[in-house]
Length: 186
Image (cartoon, rainbow, N blue to C red; front, side, top):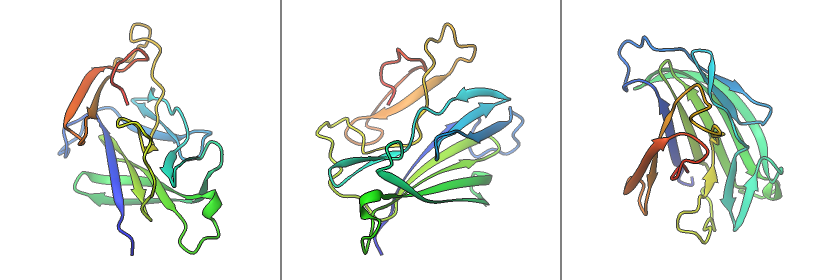
């Protein structure tokens, strides 16, 4: 069976793993774009979804927005891991042009909602080939995607970001205020 690679990103507002969480409630709500979610904290929209999932494969950018990355199925589950109890929603995607292939490209995106944080996953179920962008800082995939506020001055909720960068994940990083003029987000 082909090896799977997984990328996980967490949005956390508490120390992990939580022992007794007394912070604000975290909710995820699906948007009109399949596979995208808005994140609410204490009833306020903190992270609005910005776009559909996409991935590079065989020299092309496949996107759920244009249908080249087509939804195969979605499923909900729940469980417990070292971070605590979670509710998970996953979307399985395929290359629309490989739908009838013997071994089609398979990509999965997922979100896990825990009591104190949210974790996002990307899993390349069948691997991917020819993913190069021609830019050493270019992305191979995009999920999740969030809209930045226009300005920290006009946004009632102040947020910060931590962006890992460099040739190896964690070789460098940038931090700053989460807003449209932020340098280093992404």
